[in-house]
Image (cartoon, rainbow, N blue to C red; front, top):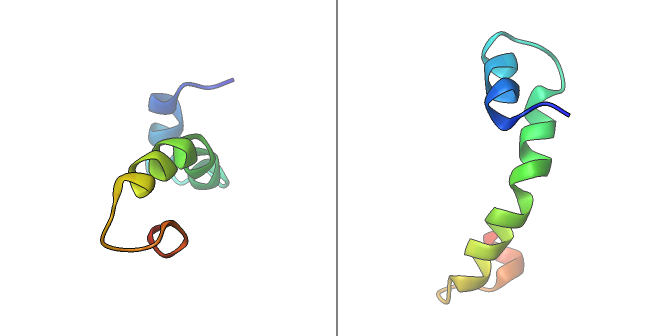
Length: 46
């Protein structure tokens, strides 16, 4: 399993599917922040 830094470098170098792997790894963090946003529903903020 590659580190997030390696995935970002791969994305910058144009390696396919590295962007989707970054998004998969960051999804829990994004959902956590989205649950703290009170100005909109959680489904609208993700």
